[in-house]
Image 1 (cartoon, rainbow, N blue to C red):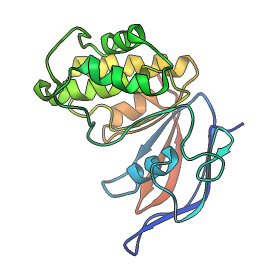
Image 2: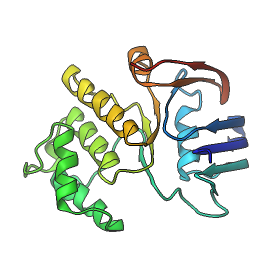
Image 3: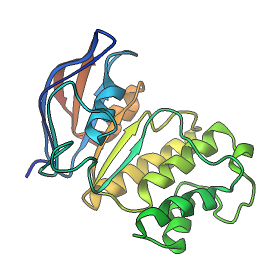
Length: 217
């Protein structure tokens, strides 16, 4: 079974076709990169795959389930899209604990472990409104990994991170992939793509324009 299958997927917003006739089949257990200029459709593609946006035409299947027919959202997915949103008045741990309680897959121990993996302190009582941009980004990555999903969509995961944090996130992405997670990521940094991905898709004006195989380090 393929991880993701898109068949003739298009999305039109206000008469503008932001995705155009996308056909894509992605295997389980690989890291896929998506590159292209701003406005090329990368983030919208991730929104469609995650079920957050319904395509204007075509179908999206994730792990054999067709979105908006069999299910509304993929059942085992985490998503980092654009600016992470948190409850500003609560600590990082409280934010992730609240989210973990929605599905009750994990408890406090797993939440703390995820926060520690990204280099934050789970016992830090400061509210998220006191966090730097880099700390917020690391907390968002902790949110993505804490429930050990089978699919992760990471849109510019290295945003606002310093060199040490980037190295940590590289390691985390590789570890998550090693345990079997399929990962899709975007980045404007060629080093991220070259270092992490098995296959890279180029996008421009809502169209996939090419694919390159890469041997990840």
